[in-house]
Length: 474
Image (cartoon, rainbow, N blue to C red; front, side, top):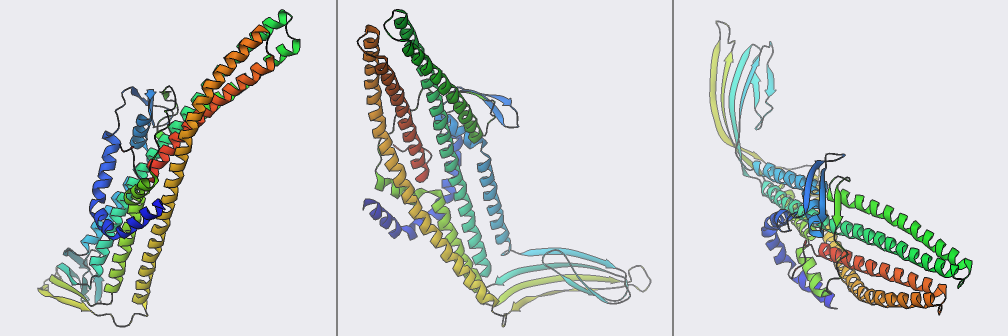
């Protein structure tokens, strides 16, 4: 119920929020882009070493999660593509604005002909010149300015501006997405590194177990099969270690690919996965997502753009009035003794009133209205999906936090159990199977602890992404 109330409260404010987001979206995108360079700590322990196998940079040194995010934002090709899309949208806005401004063209036509012809210039505004059937040179200036278009051009400009805001919001969304992918990839690499460390620790424990079994076998305290079993367990641990090393190599390369750096970069990681973050309030996070997610902002600007396009489509029913002015001078037979020169000017207005168009304008209006309804449906779906994603992240984060606490307790108990079981086996008061089971339980407990912390850190990254944030808010 708190989530439903949060959604309904947001939707009651959505119309006012859409207007405010239209004003603030540029500042939002600029702030997020600036945060990619300034908000995170500098590469205090990272150094760039030129390029590697590809043109991508090669880095070396200790890598922390914030440095991973910074590198991803700096070198992400997806983010670079989103920036280009925003620049394209800005150019389209400038193009739409140009349709409302004065246009002036200078034209010259030189022909040799024996029959009258009509020529059209290629620049805007277009000038049509009718020249006689003899050599001629025509020079002219043409100016045109829209005086009234029934809101058609104004609507197209407003739609372009909304589309530009949507592109900026999508750039911000891509920035948040890149940050999330960097955090998840870092957590996966660190999980693989921790598993590799656990596997190495298990090998050491299996070797110790083998030494104890061999010593007791030589003392005649255990049968030969106990020694064989200890050796088999050590071999199995070595196999697990090899698999863990290969997994870490894969995750390490995957992280470097996400960060946009060369796979030959020599990176070191923090000592262990961070402890699980504190629980979050679901209703508060849902409100933050509905108000701040850049992709939702982009969808709302898309709806606004569609509304402006409906206005532009209705404008086609109105008369179209353009002011025009022309200055022309023609030289006939310019290279003969019979050459003649004439010219003049023209100032006026052009009125166009559409009467019958085969229902083309009605179809354009219906298409624009349908596009607006479709975009509203997409926004409704995105809002539902956003609430689900927040709930999933909050639930997973809470479960992982609890599991991390339980796994930490499990590790402590399993360590004590192994210590006692090993002492009993060495003293001849316990069997080898007890020690093996205790060691397996401790290995499993350590794995469970790393998995719980990994789940908590990925859930935190998912929650930041689902709410449209780069960093945890205090």
